[in-house]
Image (tube, rainbow, N blue to C red; front, side, top):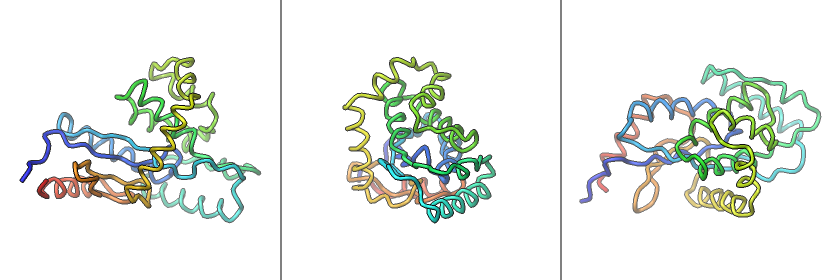
Amino acid sequence: MQMPPDNPVLLYVTDPMCAWCYGFTPVIRRLKALWSGRLSVQVMVGGLRPYAQEPLASTDKDKLAVSWHRAQRKSMLPFDYSFFLQKETVYDTEPACRALLTVRHLRPGLVLEVLRALHSAFYADGLDISDPQVLVDVVRPFGIDENLFLAVFETEEIYRQTQEEFSRVEQMGVTTLPSVYLDHPNGPRLISRGFCELDDLEDRLLQALQIPY
């Protein structure tokens, strides 16, 4: 029987424009802090609505607004609902996901913090994080050079890697964002599907680590 690794890796499958992920990222950040030196977190982009080109239908807007309200009540985080006052809203989450992969290339240790900043920019500040200039403004405080960021962000390689990560997440069987998996040589082990509180997440992690490797 193989022993669990000294520094297990959690795969956090998320999207910068996912309301429940916005509420859940603080939980992941607290878990990482509590397990400092004993746990690594790898952020994976799930692609909530990648490559969307048509504006949201009114019925889809209504469903989305309900989801935002539920996430707000659960997380107690601020939400700016001006998004729903726009006449034509194209909800394409690919650029923000690609921005996270760009940060992973340039400053891998900052991915989780940049994710938090992207969440806040979209949900609390009402900014359009599908706009490259807005993305530049979000990453600038982290010491990421604007020209370097855009140079990587706009390459065919980063487009390809983003699409490949969406495919990998699909192959993992992810059907809900956020989702958390424990990385494992035989394939990722599901820890949590959807939002949960810190105590629950930590309990699930401990149970997964007790399963023989």
